[in-house]
Amino acid sequence: MTPRFVRAAAVALAVAGAALPSHLAAQGGMDTVTIRTIKVSDGIYMLMGQGGNIGVSVGDDGVVLIDDQFAPLTAKILAAVKALSPLPVKFLINTHLHGDHTGGNENLGKSGVIIVAQNNVRERMSKEAFSARFNRTSPASPKTALPVVTFPTEMELHLNGETLEAHHIPKAHTDGDAIVKFAKANVVHAGDVFVRYGFPFIDTESGGSLLGMISGIERMLAVTDASTKFIPGHGDLASRADVEGVLTMLKNIRDRTQAALRKKQPLDAFLAGKPLADYEAKFGANGFVKADDILKLAYGELGGAKK
Ligand SMILES: [Zn+2]
Image (cartoon, rainbow, N blue to C red; front, side, top):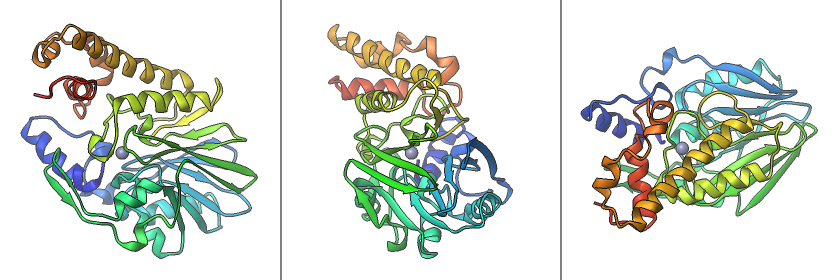
């Protein structure tokens, strides 16, 4: 989510009688946010505040951040990083363009941090964008907030005794997603290709898709193993079983939607049959992405009439 989208979404959901989960709440009230530091492996940490989880690499060569939450939190985030390393932040990798992952870019870019992301992140952040979903126009990001190093498919950073491998995951949560693997420590920052807040938000207006999420998670599982630790885009540190659970859920959404389409079942009837009843308690409880939202998306993407 982007902060500007989140504000619009908060209004839309308030009207609909639902509430945004706290991690997606708008920028107001950040004075009270505290940054929690979770050790993932030697020299690798996860910071949780408000917005997307931040990955941190510390060591002799300096600090690398993966994502940076919201601009008002930059000072607190840097204070948490200082407690881990006296060295400056050298690089920032953005997992995708959304404002709860890139909100600190301008602050960090101004202070000389090199921002790295997949090509489409820079491309989309460089332009004004209108979202029909949230009925909102987002301005182009200032130059200092933009990634200065971009890559089409793969990128590697070599420092702190580690290799950080960024892999582009096409057309998943957005069209510019990257997962970042710490090759030696066997840790992955998944960005929003894998989240733990419930049914995943798939930003089709930024090039995301259900089938891309499925193949993206499969790709992530293919470059990892049973002992990999996963830093999700949102939520607590996770295991392979947690990622597999989400993959199975997304495949069930795909398969059940395809079955309905084969029967030429209209969307209304498909939704009325509550095809995700078995997942709603676990994934639909937060009220942000409801079962019907992701089913409608699947139905449209897989070829059904969107009405
Ligand atoms: Zn996102």
